[in-house]
Amino acid sequence: MVADKHTSEEKHEEKHDVLKATQVVIHRALEKLGYPEEVYELLKEPIRMLTVKIPVRMDDGTVKIFTGYRAQHNDAVGPTKGGIRFHPSVTEREVKALSIWMSLKCGIVDLPYGGGKGGIVCDPRNMSFRELERLSRGYVRAISQIVGPTKDIPAPDVFTNSQIMAWMMDEYSRIDEFNSPGFITGKPLVLGGSHGRETATAKGVTICIREAAKKRGIDLEGARVVVQGFGNAGSFLAKFMHDAGAKVIGISDAYGALYDPNGLDIDYLLDRRDSFGTVTKLFKNTITNKELLELECDILVPAAIENQITEENAHNIKAKIVVEAANGPTTLEATEILTKRGILIVPDVLASAGGVTVSYFEWVQNNQGYYWTEEEVEEKLEKVMVKAFNNVYETAQTRRVDMRLAAYMVGVRKMAEACRFRGWI
Ligand code: GLU
Image 1: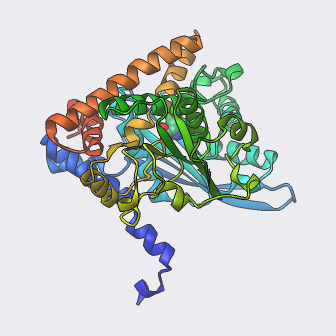
Image 2 (image 1 turned 120 degrees about the vertical axis):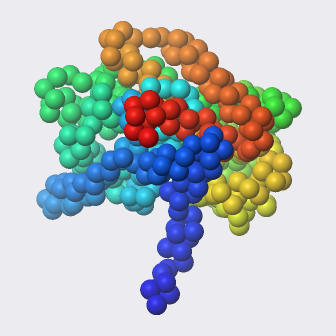
Image 3 (image 1 turned 180 degrees about the horizontal axis):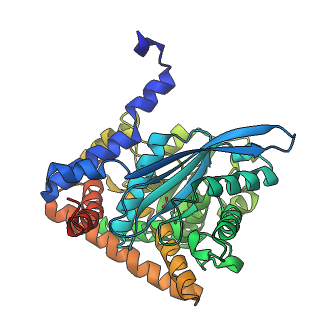
């Protein structure tokens, strides 16, 4: 039998299929809002999905063929928008789910975009600078027909950064025969990047933590915070929490976790982390990621990868609030368990929307050719995030649903309305 041949990892993957999980919540949200079934049929998958092969000349002279994807979920509201991840475990279904989440984020923070997402199956940790440049440029050439400043605007995601955005912008500008800074966001400042983009996701998460703590009567001063992941979101978040007077007692990377009940020295850890967020290898006394998630704390922030809180460990989570800085860190089963236990979950599609919000600001600045100060960006981000948080929180209260379903209801509504006005449904 075929099923018997599946490895336990494949079974885990199947069980925690992020696309299926997203579709379930989209369906529930549309049902609650009273939309007919065909709206779900349209929104359950991206309207466009491109799979490409990218030949790259490696430094040793051999040619390696990489697989890349670009998913465009829905462009009724406006051009699609979303990051590109470089990771060995990228799959087509994952990229599809990530593009749907981008649509939801854009709806929740009310941006004039639909969602998109890209991914390349590769491990940038084992590639040289020049190999990464060739891969980045090759990917842009392969997807150039369906992207562009008014079509689909990429950005950074897991293991991609402003240098990669710069190469991609340069490649696109050559194809387009124009300088096209609005093609991609998350660029270096000198190439039309925005102040505050690098820290935007963490800033947005910080605002959500502050608002959620208020709702639960938790004082941030002295609150015990655990952050899983020390990449772009996790590392800056640990810093912001530390600066806000909270005690960051646990952090982790892909290889292990650090724990100190008296609070970790975040500035030292930030100084020692590498560009992929690895830091725990420098220490002997580490704990596992599993132990980290189950630590006694007030606020837990999964800021790494998908499916970290599942039905297996949800009963052991001791935090009062879980704020999802990563995309898809909590399964639906775990969401139900945590909600029943009275733990407040601030879902990914809300908590991590600060990144795309400042990406939108970057694109607006590129389009108008006039640039804002860091203070202006921060002030605007603060307003957007507070409004989005309260909108989702109130929807959860009035419709008596958890924050995830409430966020999906808010996120999907604008898209469905845009499709209706366009006469698509
Ligand atoms: N990759 C980020 C996300 O998942 C940011 C996307 C963007 O800035 O467009 O939200």
